[in-house]
Amino acid sequence: MSKIIRKLRLEKPHKQRSDKYKKGDTIIPSTDKMIRGIIKEMVHERGRVAPLSVIEGECEGEKMKILLCSVEGTFVGQKILLGENAPISIGNVLPLKNIPEGTEVCSVEFEKNDGGKIARSSGSYVTIIAHNKDSNITTLKLPSGVKKNVSSEGRAVIGVVAGGGVNEKPILKASVAHFKAKARGQKFPRVRGVAMNPVDHPHGGGNHQHIGHPSTISKHAPPNAKVGLVGARRTGLRRGSKKVLTK
Image (tube, rainbow, N blue to C red; front, side, top):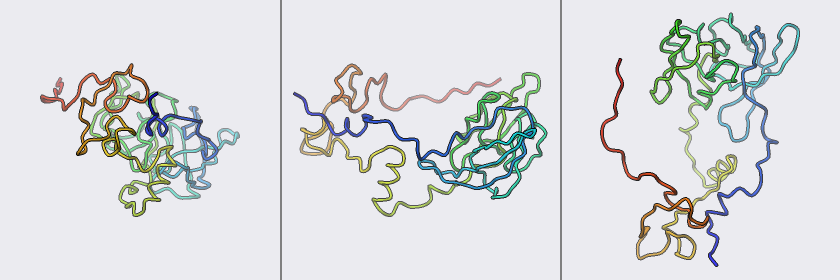
């Protein structure tokens, strides 16, 4: 009988993660009416680097609680406007068609009322490059440099997501790495398979650290054998230059 390797125990989910640490859904409310709100507090959510802004809003006499990713420059007590006629100010939410070119925005929607899907992590933002009023399409420049077309009816938050310098902070102790992984449902430390004994891992053993056989493995293999490049269509670096389409 084969032995269950450590990797299977670490990565196979044994129970569902608790949501008791979650503050709520960070989405833009689905409404076309003007919402006037004020930032009551900024809170931390486990597993998320960017702080969250708790906004108490009001729309036509109806009060609501809104949770959005905090933007650099916002503060507790700041007034926030969500709507088509909101001014171009840090923290406000407007449709893309009403935001001028060159503006840095975050929490951008692909389509209207999807809540915001693009640029939600700490320090991220996208830049509005162009508007096409005929096709109702807005071109965005993503942090990777890729240009993407989205609907001009989609909404976005003005500004850059807060917490951008988090990667500059060094991990000085192993315990910091442990709790960082624990907050994300991961394990630390993670031992390499080639550093193990052959009884503990398919890549273990040998007079020096090497795999010793092709690292590709069939996707129909038993669970304990699925280590390395599982079901790979190809391996190695891609050759040739990238083709650029020009109009």
